[in-house]
Image (cartoon, rainbow, N blue to C red):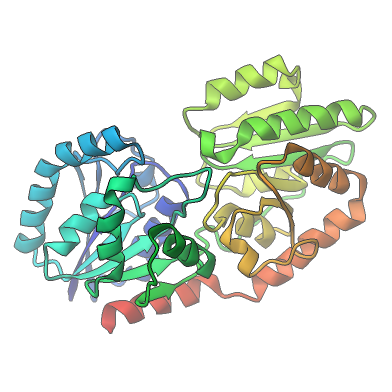
Length: 374
């Protein structure tokens, strides 16, 4: 039996958290082969715990993910020292064989892994770009050494993500694994709740600045003015610090009566049953699990071009990509699908066919286990 320590980077239920919970519940679900220990940051919410199956050993410890801000990062790394010492003792006492680190900002996990003899899997979900900074400059050399070390088995969600990290850190990463994330909600069953008298756009994800939701609201407002004879609706599903601002902005734009704001729900079938098109306008999406889930339901997708999904999806065939910094580009794509029912349906069907051509979950399980057993 192998003892595995999973180190979560948050207590939330975002994309990276869902992938981690899938690995814990499914990839390493064999209780005969694996004993699972899960630690997560204290006082950061309990949504992550809701993703886990019962009877998994979990413990909250006070630590925080690293910040891209210099001063916040320094403070974070100082206050993480007691947690690091605890985890180091915990790893030796419980004879941990494998440490699975979730997220590139999970710096405490990377430092812990470097101090133990365990095999290390570091799952890099995020990717930096000109709009989104991940690592403060003073830590670049440390990240370079970590990424080049034989100690770490790095896992990137796409070749695109790996290349961006190489450019950011000015290195050539030789020991890297490209593994497309699993689909936690594989086989979503959606009802036919679409209203023939209205056209519904949808957003699903964390309500944070990086998701570019305010731009989506502004684009939707413009469309409502341009196509006054068509009833349009926008469903926004998720939790986050931007919730009140979204309500205020929708009120300011006089579209609040066209907005349906849903709380986070691990069962996304109801959300996808309501929408014609998924719109993901993020400044940066290293992958795009929600988009894949939408394709699995034959829903058309309008997706930020800042994503690793460009490796497997063809623009204008499987989905529509757009520039997240260009609101007019987003408006044009949203209007195109609003005005062209056949194109909207075809896009969803093509996306579904592409989704079916990839066995995401089985490939993920086999690839991760191969690293652990190699």
